[in-house]
Image 1 (spheres, helix red, strand yellow):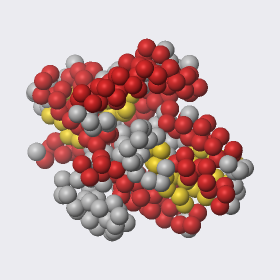
Image 2 (tube, rainbow, N blue to C red):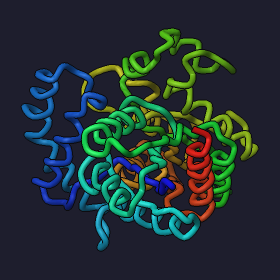
Image 3 (tube, rainbow, N blue to C red):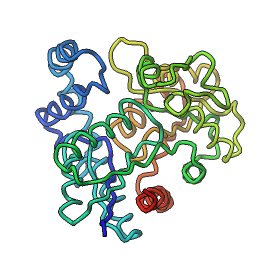
Image 4 (spheres, rainbow, N blue to C red):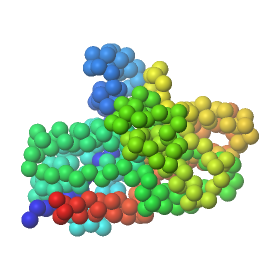
Length: 342
């Protein structure tokens, strides 16, 4: 009988805060054509000819502000999730990172060495995007075909609209939301606008009017819609009025048009509109990392306070909360059962 296992996939992190390690990580990350989708020569000129000349040193300093005694927060948290999930399931659980180590290949190999031939692979991204879910699946399939042709993989699909997830997120936010907050900002990771159209196989997406519709052929592939939809589901469960909720997109790179509104601009302008007490959550991430711990809870806080804000509360990601581990278990169990139906 085939033996089953679970592989949890997260983004990845440099091995250390050393500039050379950060440079190596950024090179692999930014040279992924699903992240910067230029032709190889232009991508190489931009990344290796420009970005990697200056950004690694700056990023290394940023990583130092969030690094723990155990290492990278994202890696540490993902290992905690792995350990907790392993205690709830009776199949082996491994982790892999899309970039750097432990890699997806390492994760698959670790399972195979335990006799596993059927893997549930879980990209830990609630929403679908070319630079997250799509690149993970493409890389995993490439590795499977080249190195592990006898292995079968079932993928956990984006879960942004699953009640068990939005219930979990809403309860996590509810426990941490200060009574004095005047607005709750949902800051999602941004993507270039062209990514939204490139990932739409239906070719029906029009960001001007389809994201807010109840149903549209492009919704299964539209990251922007999925962010707004997840927000609507969570605030409904929280019982919040829409006038107390803001959605924005962070972490843009380069001069291309990214989906709007931008988080940094939002943080700089809302104090002038009378919002002095702000809470921020980052639901594109399930694990706290550089983009949440430094970009939002440090830089974002500074931007808001300097613009006239008074109180800034960053609400942590789900990380290794027990209720989140239970969501992971259920989503993985669903895919484990699918092996019996094939």
